Image 1 (cartoon, one colour):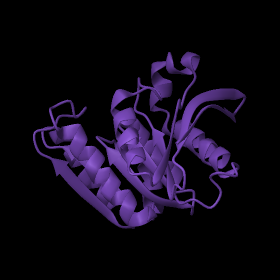
Image 2 (image 1 turned 60 degrees about the vertical axis):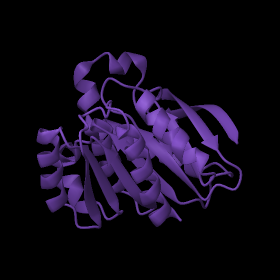
Image 3 (image 1 turned 45 degrees about the vertical axis):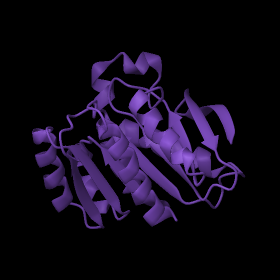
Image 4 (image 1 turned 180 degrees about the horizontal axis):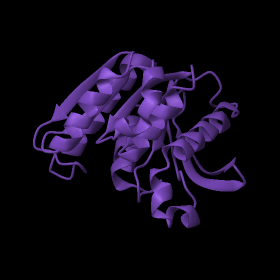
Length: 210
């Protein structure tokens, strides 16, 4: 396993990130965190660690916003900006010799899921997307351009977000599935629920990045 602390240049700022690549990885997953979070999100970190344990997937966890930008509440919901940051991180990944040629996936949580879908709608090199407790509805018209196979994971007790995900599904032309985790709320804090998210995520990426 090779681990790197990285800086991703975009729009005049440097975004902090952590890149991990197992030897012989067959794909890499870029994570987009939710509002008010960062690359240090314990839930995203747990899913990323689970993916790396397979020995098949590398992971990139990075800050979508600088500390100063994140202090402005409205900026956390600027999906266009967040998607541009994810695209910049993707281009940065693609420039690395140890990543060139590897299939790419996106994992987004909450508002990060909208950013992941918006970014995927503008690229043809995203093999699959997974959304955890996501707000795909915030991607708006970009949903119509998402052709990458997409898995939407929502907690069974997160009733409002379930409905928002169902509406988003209707706007997406590609392969899309909605999986509801019983007994889970928005943050998947209940025992065993985050582990189920990680299992579902691994299965989806193994199917489409394998």
